[in-house]
Length: 212
Ligand code: BEZ
Image 1 (tube, rainbow, N blue to C red):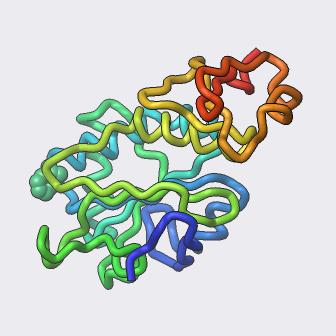
Image 2: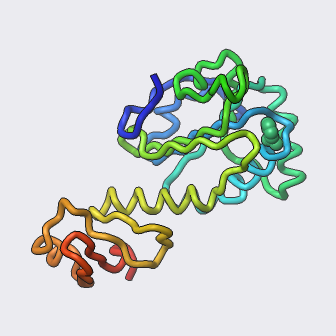
């Protein structure tokens, strides 16, 4: 059965470009991004892995560890990483799983037979420090993902986890956030000293709480 939000992220041991890794041990107390791509030496995937490497500091700032997966073998990954580094002007600095026996692809339901019988689609999972699945997105092979959007969602997930707030449509860093319905206005007034803007009893904004 496919994974759903709030499910435990399945653990696995895998061969990667950084050696054998136990996924949960690798994550430790960090947040995680596990994402699949259809195949090595393909153009869209080359840009995606390059972009992820370029955003290394942004992921690190948010305490997020990244891991990529495809069903191609390790020797193919290694040669391709050189091409990514050369063409995307970066250094790939995260493990890429060689999932030849499709253990990870099966655990995370990354092969969608109507798209391809053998290759993984562009699945992406964000996993919290509690090892629960917080976000699932699936793109087709022909569309490269927006990794700034992945960071934006991680910011929203971390705000929710730390402050009981949600983020409105198109929210960006620095903009007001929404007080979750489970918090009463009386409690919200104590919890959010920067103040509330009450548009409707169920639509209450407060300045982003983690900014000075
Ligand atoms: C790509 O990564 O460029 C790609 C892979 C499979 C199908 C289409 C594009």
